[in-house]
Length: 125
Image (cartoon, rainbow, N blue to C red; front, top):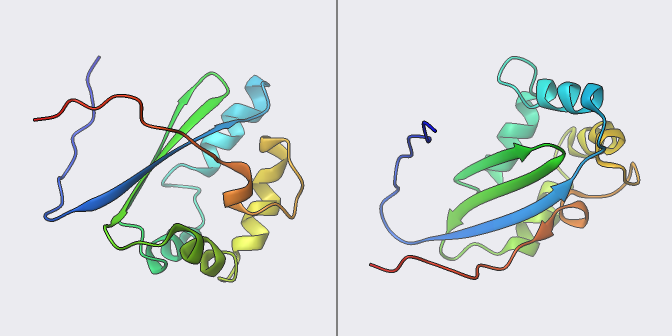
């Protein structure tokens, strides 16, 4: 296992970890991965994520299970950011587009699909 190089930001941040199961269909999973790649992603979506104050976002996949890790400033307000994100250009279009992979309503917002995970362990210094 190689691992992933991270740049640690200075100062305090909030980390959110969320879970989502997508349709368990190898063709749909391959296409979902494609639309999240650097080559095929929608630039407006990445820009919108940054506009609402998110510093870093990663999605990990195992089979049809996804885990999303979001880092934001310590004073970040999740609900306020999600409300704003839902109003940004192409966001509703993106959510409707990916709904077919996620097995949910086309009008579901991101924060209605992804389920927050609870941290149960941390390796303290």
